[in-house]
Length: 189
Image 1 (cartoon, rainbow, N blue to C red):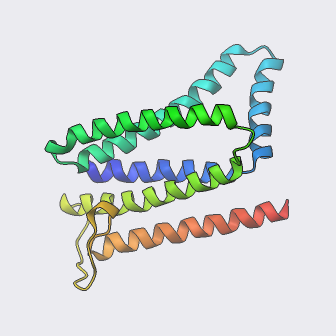
Image 2: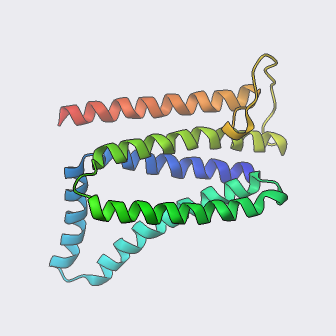
């Protein structure tokens, strides 16, 4: 279960990271939101606007739940309270960020914020794919081919197995290829 949830979280994180990266241009983002909201307001489709708003918030909540479930499966039962304290600290941090964001939003470079956020998401996805593959190996779903001279860093999802290392390297390759292709598309526009 731990491995599968981690791999699902990787997919969700990658989609979120790709979405953040592709919408990192503030003008594109503003146009996207204005287009969607304007479309529903012009046609007086309040249900459509409510559904769009719900989906935006639900997607974020779903990502958080998946991430927290993956973290909670990794944590020992004695460390479960640390997860709760981490969530509380995250809420406080988000509150502070939201305060400063609303107060100084004209000065915050949205493009850099989206780009940095997408790279943090990529980093988390690489960690989670390593942990997910390791979890599937522990349950016997994936074979284990050890790499004796390789190091192990549990909290980074780095394990001395060929499968977990190849999954992480493959994921990094897919992310870099996607980044390169999206950069080419932006230049073509």
